Image (cartoon, rainbow, N blue to C red; front, top):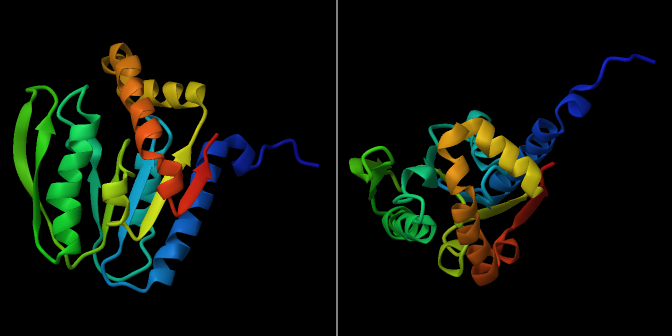
Length: 197
């Protein structure tokens, strides 16, 4: 018996995300739509961005898929709900109506809106971010994902990713996520729920 660890045991997070991506891609194929919308929610550090990038890299249909991260829309550390509302109003609703959506990136350093971006309604769309699955947004997504992950693992990954910039704001952001969980029940609105170690 080999003493070398398997790739799955060496990195259980990557293995879990890989399995989640495979199931989401199967669901996308099953929808048989030219421009499906995938919504990915989960608390900070749960793996949303990694999963979204996997989906883009393995997208099962011809052509380009658009990816929008809510980190680019939240207007600062108290802006979880406002960022989600901007995504609904400026990206998801226009896409559902066949209209071009236009949103402005939030410049975290300047604490102000920055350049504008367009979303093409004829192309598939992935939107990922904490707080995303609400009563108002869920009906605008074809595949709706919730990632569940232990707090200690999430915090470690988030701080490794964002460094000391995020540390003083962790609790402040977590309180907004708690309100989202209580108010919006995102696991109930998801078509897929995945456990990420």
